[in-house]
Length: 383
Image 1: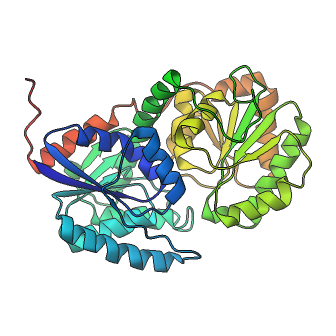
Image 2: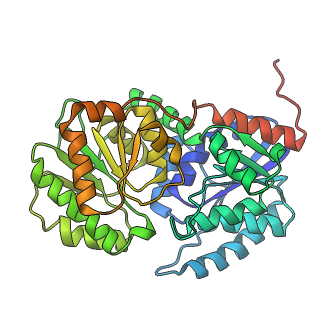
Image 3: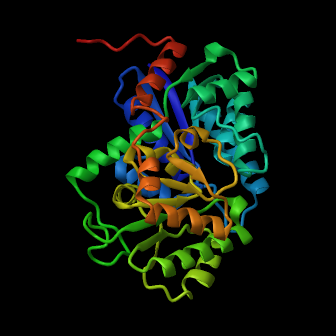
């Protein structure tokens, strides 16, 4: 039996790794140990509850008002101690967080091979997204197995001189998680805390779902986003604008200053949603405004147009497919493009085609197979 450790710290990582954890824990060929750094404490626990996953080790690294340098230093040292104790045969990481980079570095220091789920994403600009672009570029240099969601991601890795035999095009596990969540929601429709009764129902008013949390948008960027939402709410009083507001004070401050004082009754500011209610709201909404990477990947499978409030994206496949459009943080641009989708059926239908370039929901199986082959584990018995 081969020992695989999985380390992550944020809600998006937890969502995208949940199918992999469930698959490894149900496979007798592997012993799977889950270790969390808890960068997103409350939101991380919500994902565990949704998928029935319990972590084996909680490093609990978060501190109030921490700096990136302080978090990085603590993460490398703490993950290093974990690896010394656990001695895994393979370490799996995901995405582009501080936990991702620090775990890759600690794995390198301990001569533990690293498998990177969602490898090969690039904007080519170390300042956007910041610090995520640097995290994933640095993690690539320390990784043994690269699980690229798309062919374009593979080409990015080849440009970085990663050996072709170490790259596996798998699709994105976020689609696997989305399909799991969709099945759960069909059986047990979740409540959506904070919304008026009936608004979450499928036959309710048209709804625009909003998310935002990127560091590069802190300050003027978020102020502009909030002003755009307020203007849209005034122009479209019959449409509900639902914004689960991230817990970061840099997000909550402009939201409270601009949107809570706007006097628009159709703007609903609620606390961050657990994963299952959030998937239900994505499935329910008309349009999504977001700076989230995961939403760009999930929404096309649900046929939902996404306007990305960023200047760059490391996920250009959906832009090329036409289901996602970059609008930046300019107030006028956000209002203009959202208004088009809400008033022009032809424009909406063109973006709402349910075509997802990020996979077929079978990425997990491909990742598990690649790990087994690397570790020299025999195929599972058919008996």
